[in-house]
Amino acid sequence: MAQSLTLTFMSGSRDGEVVQLATAGSPPSVSIGRTAPCELVISDDPDLSRRHARIFWSGASWMLQDLDSSNGTFIGEFEAARRLSGASAIEDGEIFRVGLTRLRLGGAKNERVVTAAAAAIAKAKRS
Image 1 (cartoon, rainbow, N blue to C red):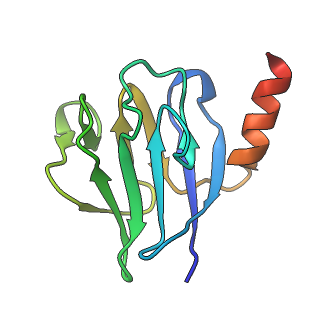
Image 2 (cartoon, helix red, strand yellow):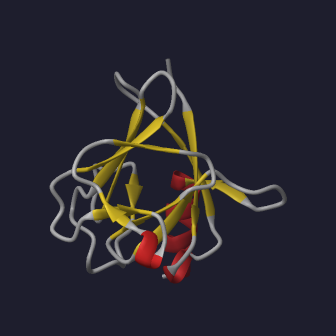
């Protein structure tokens, strides 16, 4: 069963942008990295691995998993951040970091929601 995943950028050039991603596979998941075929591509983060992390639906909650990235994946902020050593449950509103990019699971009311494809098209037009 496909799930929709909403992420909000909390830093970097896309700070404040909200993306809604369609998950695929079994379990439904989205990969995050610097290059395609990741569903969420963040090409301007030099600390992000090509395939850095994935978020998948466990049937009861979203799980965040590092994909053996060079710089790790962290849940939480600043001193309270913990580096993932395996898959870990992540709750709506929780902030996590991949590379230098901070993301929040979920969006907020009144924020502009764009699909990842629309964001890529808009970025290409600006270039």
